[in-house]
Length: 167
Image 1: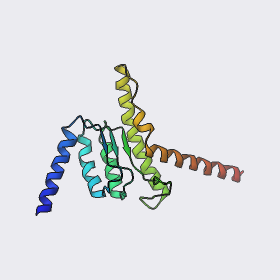
Image 2: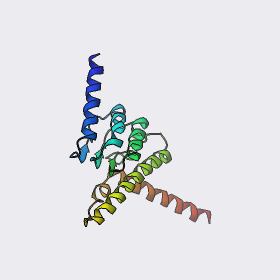
Image 3: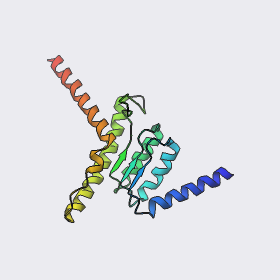
Image 4: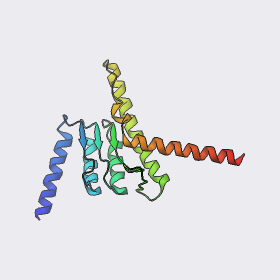
């Protein structure tokens, strides 16, 4: 019973932090042993968050359920500009797969990146109308962006090789 009470308190605290605290702009949970259950809890509150711009959860071993929950939370949130994850690559460069299939993992990364780009484009439009121009910094430095770019260049190289070989 004590654990249930603590979990309820923690969830209530997280909801309050996410929904009422508009001063919280960046949340760094990198290398914190973040579990998929915790990621799912964060994802439940992210659509209600009106201040959080950057959630860094790199160097954690989230499973597919945790990654998909964060992706769906980001889809419903039009404020957060950067959800940083290591899905395709670990920090040391080795391959890490969530689904056991590189193509599926790449599609998950691409979907998350697309939601981040959508939100950043909206923020950019608002900033330009107010005379400001600096909103792309978070997403440009993202590990997720780096991994997607690396995977896309690998795919282009493979595709080019196949075309040359086919001719």
